[in-house]
Length: 287
Image 1 (tube, rainbow, N blue to C red):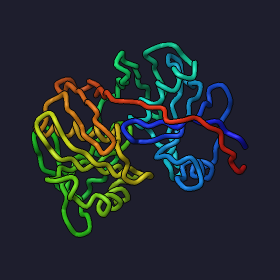
Image 2: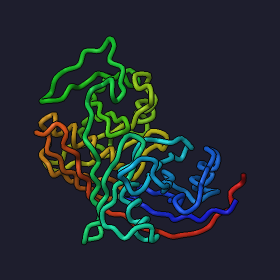
Image 3: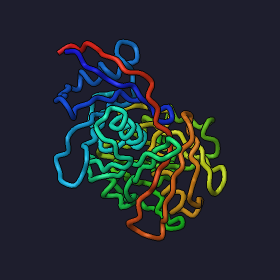
Image 4: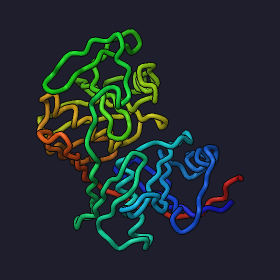
């Protein structure tokens, strides 16, 4: 099977983007893994699929598949690439589009400066909705947030649990570059208290409006940037009284700007950042 694709990235978080809007695209998990393979395929953290919506009132359906072949709920950096792709491909000429994701809808807006503003929706902090199993645990309050103890290789780490449509565990560390992200990240990702696994975020506070962040993503490993992870970290930091919006989030792949009015419970987080097309091509995939 021959498949046309576009390679894109948002702050170094890279994607293979496919047009399933003008033609049906049905890939197996094995085919997704083949496309994402950095040695034998195109190479990507995630595969993004543009489709016709299955609900009213939106322009497109946005589906995300991790490089391990599994479908996931949301990807913020991918959302920025999504709107650039549909505009560049001639699927729309609108600057702002509403798209269907696995758990609701989001609004994506191409700004005059070339960056994309994404309405990421409201964060969810109730553990059972993340989901995170709290049975037998005693949390501690910090500001408006509750921190939960998590046993990681025999050490207790205090984490915030947040859903941005996908699950996140966020902890504050002194030096994000020195912290053993590649050791603790996979342990947290597959921790038994997260029944759907989790994205593990490691946040260093630089100032009240600036952080450094590394994220070990569920099903993808550490990526150069994670949009939902940036939002989860900022939301947790604001709730804990450590941060004031807007917040600059420095990742290995670039800087994102996250805004949020935490005084309004249903207020969405807004993320602004770049979206870049790298190249287009065609690949032969085994059936």
